[in-house]
Image: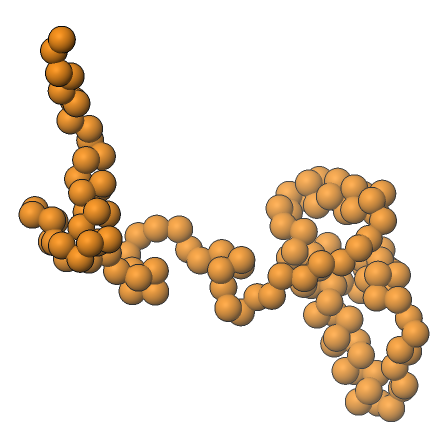
Length: 129
């Protein structure tokens, strides 16, 4: 019986490098290290909201029918991101609350944010929705 010889793989160098990292042995022909994500510069995709430290992921429960209607409007208007709409609505709500506080109108703590955001959406208080 003939001993089978393994055909070389295009991934052999990667496997050898990984084995070398695990044992601390440098593999011949492999120089340098892979820079951390923060160190990488150059072409590539821009950082998304998910990996940006300037954004927080939040969860909100809204009625399914409302979510469907909003998605339909966003598609019709050529807008792609639901989160952009929510960001604009929340920014308008904060601005309105700040304006109300600056002229001495008390805020309404019992008002539901979802109902208020829906009212903002359909009242036209937010531009380009």
